[in-house]
Image: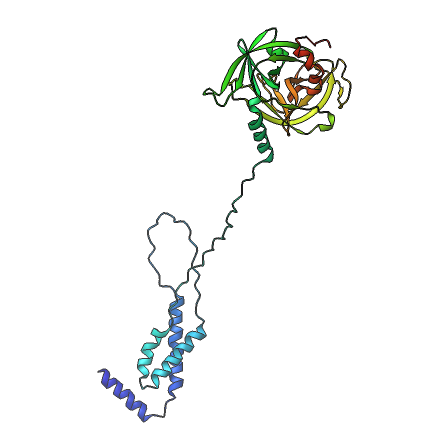
Length: 348
C-alpha cells in the first residue's frame, strides 16, 4: 500500500510544476525543529509521588540549553544533505533524531581552598634556663643540707672545712649533722657531724666547722647598681640529702637595716659604705621555702653574693608575696673571721 502511495506522490510531483527541494526541506525542518523544541521545553507530567522524608537540599543542576537558531541550523543542514541524496521522507524521519538532547550539567562544586602547610618551628632553648642549669650543675655539690633534730636547713661551703648557714637553722645546738653531696656514694651523699662555732642573730649567720674536702664558692659584694640582675638559689626545701632544688630570679633591691629580725625601710646600700652596726640586705624574687634558709644567692658568674634567710614582710607584718630576703656578703665579710673564732657577733 505504501509503495502505491509513494508512486502516486511521485507521479503527482512529476506531473506538476518543478519543486524547490531546499525551500521545502527548510520549511519542514523549521516545523520539526519547533515541534522538538516545544517537546524539550515542556516536561511530561509525572504522577505525584508518595510523600517521603525531606532530603537534605542539594544544589540544583544548572541546565545550559542550546539556542533555537543552532537547533534549526543543525536540522536544516542535515535534512538538505539527505534530500540531495534523493530521500525527502527519510530526512523528515531523521530530523528529530539529530536535534541535540539537552543533558543537565551538574552545578560546579566549590573547590576547597588549599591551606598552607604549617612551617615546622625550631625549638629555641631559653638562655636563662640554660644558665640556671649550668649554675646548678657546676655548684650543687658545694651546697649542703643541715639537720638539727627534726628540722632541716641549708648551708654552703664558704672556705676549706667551713660551712656557713643561718643562726635560726642551728639554734642553740653545738653540733649538727651535715649532709654533703657525694656522687661517688651509692646514696648520693655523705653525712658528717659538724660543730657550731660563732653565731650572729642580727645578721642571721652561723659558722660550722666540718672536714669535707669540697671546693668552696667564690664570693663578691653587690649594691643597688645591680638591681635587675639575675640570681639563682640552691637549697634543700624538699629535704632530700644530696639532691637540692634550684630557683632563679633577679635582685629587687639592696638596702641596709639595723637587723634581719624584723622588717625596716632602711637605706640603699652602695659598695664601700661603712655598715657599722647595720646589715646589708638583698631583696630578690627567686622562690624560697622553709628548708632553703642558709642557702647561697648566686650571680650569673657563679659567685655567692648573699645568704637566704627569710621572706619580706610589710611594715604591718604581712608577707610580701614573691619577695625574699638574704644577708648580703658585704655583711658576712664584716664578721666572718670573728665567727670562726667562736664568738657571738650579734652586737658588733
